[in-house]
Image (cartoon, rainbow, N blue to C red; front, top):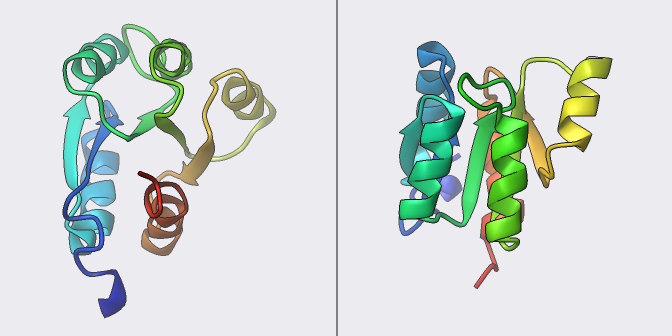
Length: 130
């Protein structure tokens, strides 16, 4: 919808995703919003990038190499409790539910990303946040 065009053009988010296709789909879904997206390909890089350039919102695959997304989000939320953490999950199995509940994430989106879902989640967490 045109009402979502450039609604996040002043915002930057950090995405932890080791899968190129999933990342490209996420970028395509978010393109109309004008949001800036930084990408980390593994957990350690995600943590380092956040430390150097804290963003108001982090989207991560919970199964990242070199330190899984759940562990990284726990550390990020301890450092920066106001940062919104979104888990990106392919399906919600019992193991995924456990990983998600242990991850300190505030919300989740499907993987691959569905445009309406991700824009709604970002609106919920980024609009009216000072």
